[in-house]
Image 1 (cartoon, helix red, strand yellow):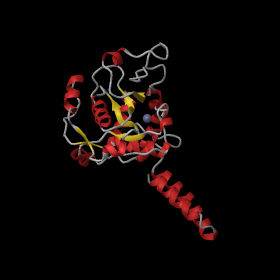
Image 2: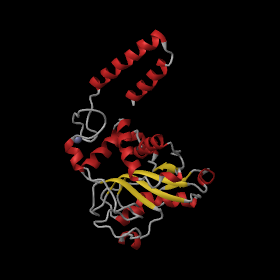
Image 3: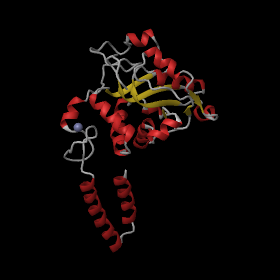
Image 4: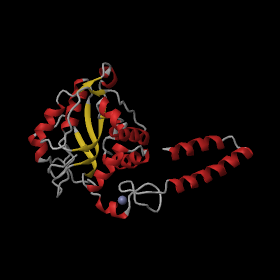
Length: 271
Ligand SMILES: [Zn+2]
């Protein structure tokens, strides 16, 4: 963030032109070179040094499993073989979700876990930009409708403890990259829920039941709009289903879900 802020302010200064502009431009290059020394390019997941820019080291890159077609058009679960455009997963048929479509950039595994953990506990906004670029690709079917982006909220006390809502960081980065509106205050998590770690699917659903409520103005703000709900990880979907129901009850025409990672295997994962 500091990096970009400096670049932007530098560019504005240079518009002034003349000798001062030239000096500032030279100063900017010097400052950027200095920043590269202070913050050398590092792998977004493990922090190992990398050759340039924002990205992953070869080891982490090899550990990423992107979620690509063919997949269930509703839940976004990858299929082993293409079953035709209308084939829906057994999971979606057995338990139809309130949202229209869910998509995720990568399978939840070791590398995704490292990225999400860094996102939760550090202020490296370039990491959110990196994750959001992958999410923008995974949600490519969503953007034509110019949806409103809504991050899954954290409870106030947890926000104070962590200082960052990782879902907000992701939604904010997506909004900037795609030129979309974001409304982070539409939904509130008023009930302090216990951690979902170690809970079964039913337990997770019960845990988040009644945890969310809509802002008093929500009806006016989202009536008839398509919404894309943004979260870091899709596990059983309990949280995004609960928030989707609130959004639909308050007038959203349709809700899609976009997460950075998603659990595919169905195994219990300590998130
Ligand atoms: Zn790495």
